[in-house]
Length: 184
Image (tube, rainbow, N blue to C red; front, side, top):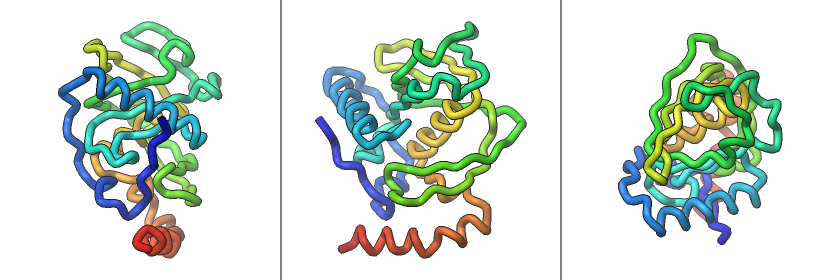
């Protein structure tokens, strides 16, 4: 079932989300609906607050571009993108490499705005799964960026918060218009 995607200005996007404690049928149905919604919206990730749910739950799928990373390790072993997509995770913890990179980001909850965001190039993500297992994913490229972007959502952080001062000024008026449209 397609779910409505919450837009910029909705308070749920600024909340520190609650940890997922129940991974039963209701959570599994939510995950299936989130994946369907993400695919329908042509996204590479979707976090629970983006559909109005205050939980540390996110889905990512970058399988459309298997060349989007230069390396991928899952639980210490080399892996292929297709092996873990769609990537579903709850209550994540991230460790970052020292190198930073700048790339364009957009967001399904901030329609029509894309901007350059500086983030760590590499991530080591400890990602509990809804089946009780845990994946430790080490990667770079689009997958690293998507994991970081979706985890930010779970902490009430939006990509526009990570823009440079010049970047923030450049999107300020467009963000105001989005809030005005939201309040109509």
